[in-house]
Length: 185
Ligand code: GRF
Image (cartoon, rainbow, N blue to C red; front, side, top):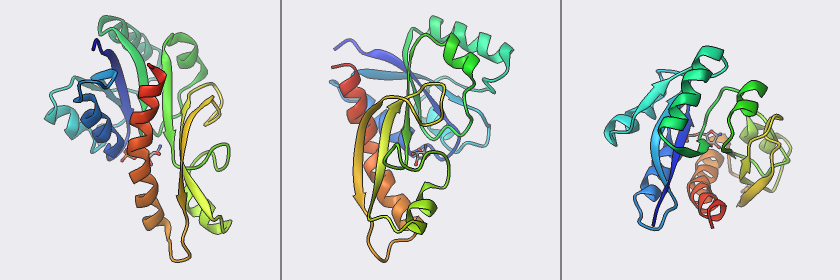
């Protein structure tokens, strides 16, 4: 299979990146990750870039000069898809306008409910019975682009933020890979 090249954006631990890297090693998975961007050099996930020998860069993409550099890089590296995986910086309108590629994100709630941060805390406070994760396209409004796939998680009475995070993230890993397969099907 001829794989498309993809760039993954991270800010933190990079467990979704790890799952995507694992999937990308499979023969039938449609993407190959050939570039990693972080907005901070403190992102633990950058160790995966080193481990897998994937080029990476720490960049604030809301700065014009960095955006121009990145545009050249995605052209040079023939990147067709950008995957946000725990990327904590909001991409500005200029970035969205200039990147003529599909951008997808994974969010830890059943969108359109609970956009933004602290989703586990919010669902628990609202005594929800169900939560989950959503993979969606990125547009100019936060967590509002077209939904690709959702996976549900049942909230038990003894769940707390930590247990919920573990349950939701475990679903995220499969959700992200399945979404990417569906995009290129
Ligand atoms: C995930 O829960 C994702 O839904 C959210 O940020 C978290 C990233 O975790 N956008 P990791 O860096 O992939 O471990």
